[in-house]
Image 1 (cartoon, rainbow, N blue to C red):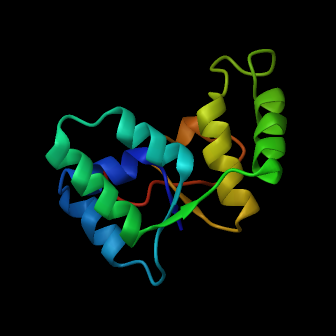
Image 2 (image 1 turned 180 degrees about the horizontal axis):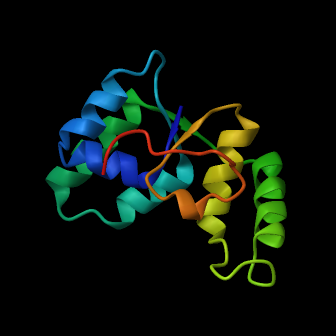
Image 3 (image 1 turned 180 degrees about the vertical axis):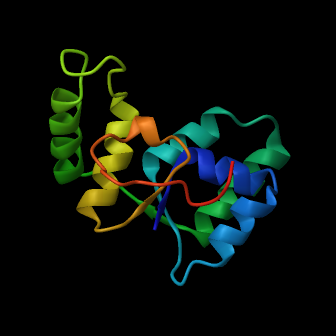
Length: 126
């Protein structure tokens, strides 16, 4: 299971539903390096940074290689501004491509950000 940034933020904030979801996963959760970047960009202090860095040791972190980059580019072209009212953010495209290339399901609360996954649903209540 690849966790989108919003899910990881809920876990870091101690949101019960998110923590229960992640703890109930039968396998080690994964993150994209894009999520790692987004989390580190929002760090507020050294204590929070240490907490996030510990998380990177617990979760599997998936790198972005050429296969992921290529698929993300395809997603941006397919779901970009000429095809959609809300154009696909390239960072979301990279997260989606990471899930697809690594054969992982995506857990996100932002269903509109991932139109390439038909039937995607929220992993826990909002």
